[in-house]
Image 1: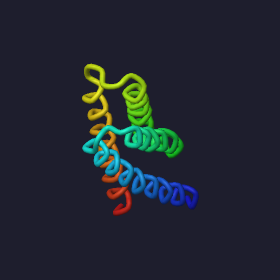
Image 2: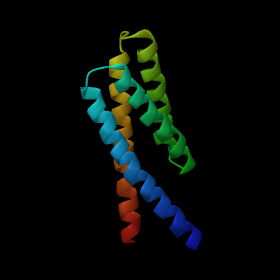
Image 3: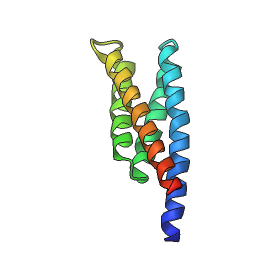
Image 4: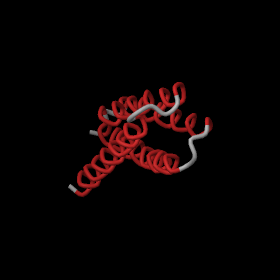
Length: 111
């Protein structure tokens, strides 16, 4: 039982950090598409991809992996049809999944 509680604490901590990263991703989308901005987007997506799976949040990991791929494509090829929309959609999906999981954990705590 103790292990479950410790894991839940770690998962909650991950979600709090994921929430901050998604907020930064959202802010970066509104910024100018400089190489530095794209590099930061890639970095944040990569971190979420790796950590999400480790803590059992497969959808966060999958969305982050797809975001990372889309941003790398944008950095490599420049704006191509639909790429900005795809990036926006992945960030939107990440936001929704992080919010959903945070609510789940808030409910679990009150049980």
